[in-house]
Image (cartoon, rainbow, N blue to C red; front, side):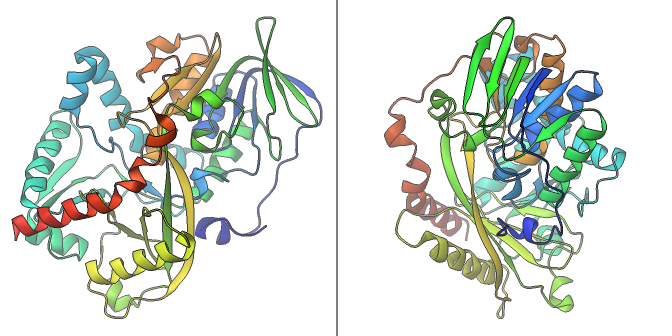
Length: 428
């Protein structure tokens, strides 16, 4: 198999699961072998439910295996006060609690199931690229701190000392966050789910979902699953299975690169505590290291030909500039993946009929929030109404003018970059 990402390349031999070649019955059928599907399988099987998971390719083939491995227990664009204003106190606080403990759940599962995945609960840092952004960062940190989260605000000099990056007005960190190897983590969840009794089939794309008696029949090219409930966990990789889902989010292609290992003397200056970093820019700047001192960073792309070559080069040059690396090691790996971004940047459950749900919890916070989503879906599968879960729940809501607006994040990237630069100039 050609390596999909750095994580697939360094993962060594992979134990492939068989394709579905029979008719099987289950309490819960899951479509998609990423974080949300695997977490759901594990938690549902642990509750004693019979579980079948169908993956069209291999475990962690989609966004799960193509991200940077950041474990971040909050929302990409919304702060707690925003969520309370939007959802009300009771529903809002439930969603906030769902997110705030999500990283703790990830690392607890890793410890409980002895998953070897380079995991470190070393913290996640968000530096502020301007004075105005630092004011917002301080407010954000205070809101999470008031809810008992282990957050710390750092000034300019401490931020530089902790990250090794100059020019930031300050930062905040949530110490419950961290980093890991996402493919190894996903494979560990798969092993744990199977140990709990779940059945996982790869190379088994679902071609149809039909209502049958009190449940559903899922059809593949070589087999059938009959299940009481179905959870669609494909995120932005759902294809044509349920076309209405694709019109409820913005598909965002994100590129990642990993350099050759940095020299140890340089590595000591950058992130000596081995945290993960993503700043406040609209054109987000991120960086972290893996266990072999490869420097990992990502970015979006402006529409145009040759993105597969052009964008990794741009990210590489940005790393050299932002981290003052006169001789940044060459790119060892470059890859991309699709993220699903909701208009309100919050997780969502989509009601597709009795006993049929789809979940979208990414928005740039894939590992922590999708793992937590799996735990919640397992409670739904065991009999709790979806409306009682902490995640917003509704029938499919098509984004108006989706055919045009789905490209908005990429089209508007140059404008976002200009606004970032103006913010920095005003703070200089």
